Amino acid sequence: MSTPAQSYAASEIPVDGTGGAGEFERQRIPPSQQLSGKYFLGAYAGEHVAGTEFVIGASLVSLGVSTVDLLWGLLIGNLMAVLSWAWICSPLATRSRMTIYWYLERLAGKRLAAVYSLLNGLIFAVTAGAMITVSASAFRVVTSIPPQTAWYPQSLSFVALVLFVGAITVWMTIKGFKLIANFSTVCSPWMAAMFLASGVISVPVLLHMGELEGFATLSGVVDTFVWSGTTPEGDPGISMWVIAAWAWGCNLPMHLGMSDMSILRFARKSSYGYFSAAGMYIGHYMAWVCAGLMGATAALLAQSELLGMDPGGIAFRILGAMGLVAVVVAGWTTSIPSLYRAGLAFQSVFTQYSRVSVTVAAGVVTTLIACFPFVFTQWLNVLSYFFILIAPIGAIIVAEHFLLPRLGMRPFWREAQGLRHNKPAVLAWIIGIGVGVALLLEGSVHLFALFIPGWLASLVAYPLLCRATGVEKHHDDDVYLDAYGPVQPEETVGMSAQQAPVNVRDPWYFIAIGCLLIILGAAGWAWLEEGGVIAHLEAFQNLIVVPTALYFLAATLWMRNRRKPRHQPS
Image (cartoon, helix red, strand yellow):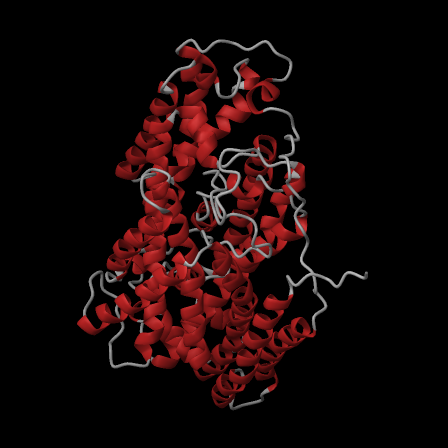
């Protein structure tokens, strides 16, 4: 999921517009600072392969979806997510060139913007807490600590382990955005390869075990052992449309919730929103499918229920020691940027404190949350409840930009009229939450899909309330020019253009790519085994140790060299 982990190839892009050097918090992005599509293609491709994929992929198996419903549901839902970025978030971001925090403050005033920042920060803090628990589950495997699958910690040793992992997470977070971006850039390609390898090697193992049970076809094995269409309790599973709703909504804060305005405002063209497809179909299609295959295979090998296993135990069964590394890295590539974003969101409210102080305080609370495994065991439900609260805010921003001008009202009318608060926005937010809560209590709409009626309710209610409260009509030809300024903002004196990465042809780059291909080749070799697939699984776990170590060495050296300036002839 994205989750919030931004693994940008260009580390100069702030995480939320207030990042790194604190630039452009209240300044529209001038042409010299706008970036080409390759930055965003790499960003989305790396961002959505992280610790959440271990949790979500296995959870979808436990929820009892069928194979056909899963594949079609993910296809449809991820398409809706891509279109939400490309048709809604990106056009608004590239026209306004503002962070969501600044935009919302101008739209609704400081009070509602502060409430949004607190909610946003809480979502990121819970995300970070869940992923700290995921990382700790990998360390747990090499100890005598039992799997932690209850809602509360069942071992004091596990609590101590979480506190240790949390302390490392907080330390890495306060080192700043550049370290976070570089860490994610190095780790994300390897994580994608490990997810794909886990799926590639799980299939022949499943076929072998299926033959022992009398199943001769891949579809029969997968339908029986992985996505069976029924829950472990024997109840009917969730439908294709629920899967589609979840795939669409799991990144709701970023697209329909408009958080990625803060990133896409750097894009030269609004069409770069389509590059989110790289993340959706690598991370939220391939990685979820492979994580499901890996989880089901691990449960069969362990002769255990999938619900009784944690991410560390699952990955260790299929990927061996490198699986534990994958879980730790995946957890950190999500928890560290999420905690960073939480600190920024909270610091925008508690401005009297520094980012480091607020981040440390948030990290302490986040680590305490991580001691309770319910955060990741109930991860899909926890996020869905948050979405009921956050979705209406995004709808109000969308209505401000797309609908109000069509009704003759200018964006930022509150600011133009000198009003302290935007009452229609507050009421529309309450209406959206009310619709979501009412449908939740009534039970006719699945929890994963409740963001849709709540978002639509606020989208419709806000312009109607603006009209009902007498917002003045605007008669200028270009209301966006009046509200935002020119399409291309003026340059800041002394501002230089962003520099593209250099030294792309560094030999270490090709060595790193070669290591990933070796890992995938070692996984694919299992398909050529006539028998002894289980033995090959053990050999595979040993074979990938050396290329993994060499990959991280090569990728780190490439990352160090890629920003060295080219030699300029005298």
